[in-house]
Length: 345
Image (cartoon, rainbow, N blue to C red; front, top):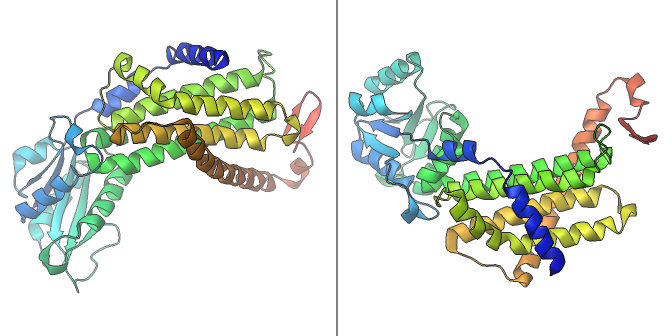
């Protein structure tokens, strides 16, 4: 218990060094997605679908998506992104003219075609929304619209998720995976270096600080994406209460590996991934439904995350081998790294 209290104190010190201003500014940036169409009720319906998702009751008052006629100059002028909605089985010259005008003006836009049964596919680069029996297939429509909007990168993912609940699950899933992979990659590099040759600081110490900073920033971004209060002093103590068990699991696992150095780098990399993944998943579930974790549930969550961590290690190893194999033949005989006289191939 004393060890965990000391670890928590160290984490609070690290938290004071985490700069969350950029994440908060990105998440709170206002935007407007306009669905423009001759069929305004359908356009409004698709806009409303973006408000369905995790914690739909916790959406800021900003109206971030709405439907409008193709000739609504006022709404189009306000738009950060325009989704032009047309029917695949009907010619719509007005929609095409609007698309060309927006492209000329460098306004981010997408063409989305309602695809009745039997209608031809207009173009692979557009969004196709099935409409059997004259009503949109909502699940497919959401999936395709979310993917297309995110790929356009006209609006930050954190802002999309914070203001439109339909984006929350996919954005957070990607955030957790990306942060866990980044931490695993960093842990791999730190494990290869062992000791920082410039400062002489044991990399194990710097490793823990960097991983913890990334985990805390990820946790804060998840709360922003889920529409939680952005005040750090209000939300971070609650987050630390949620992830306390995860930090204990991480410390215990790292301690065990440190007692068995013969195991090598791979277990440490897997633990870096698993600890980050488990913490992200716990914060997401807490934001979504207030779920709390007992010690047994933490162990179960961490065990599942560790399986994903081992898979991440294997992927990193494959990438490293592939990169090594592309080196010129004369360089392959040289070690990738040499630390304290020990060759690292």
